[in-house]
Image 1 (cartoon, rainbow, N blue to C red):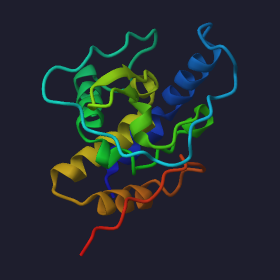
Image 2: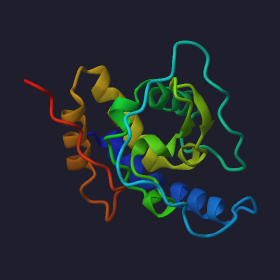
Image 3: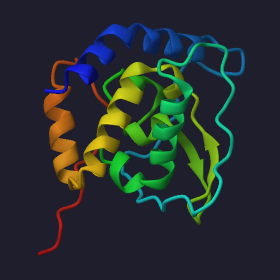
Length: 172
């Protein structure tokens, strides 16, 4: 078990709760109910090579150094085929999130270009921890199914998760 991942998530989970609460109280929110999203994952195209848009400016302190936050957001942009099949465990399903990918990317153009980031992930240690762990496993050459299984096993102590489908079976 990755002690740094576990300790970081446990010690900073309060930052996520504060960030979720702040977003829900934000005057820009038109209602307290999360927007309904379809339950099926639609495969996303990765962001094309080149610069990504600037991350959103938030009024709260990021739960990791900004260099680390940027890496996880870039991973989400470049590898939706991974994070769209990895659940998040911070409670963001209450906001309508269906996977860890949606903690970082709010919308994409048809070509995969990021049109809007989701600021939630910046302040949430759980979201960032899950994304960073998935990124590390991906960089070790693990398959999406192995990444999902590892994160599910490591995060099994959390009481809830996003309704994330399993990755498609690989064709033989």
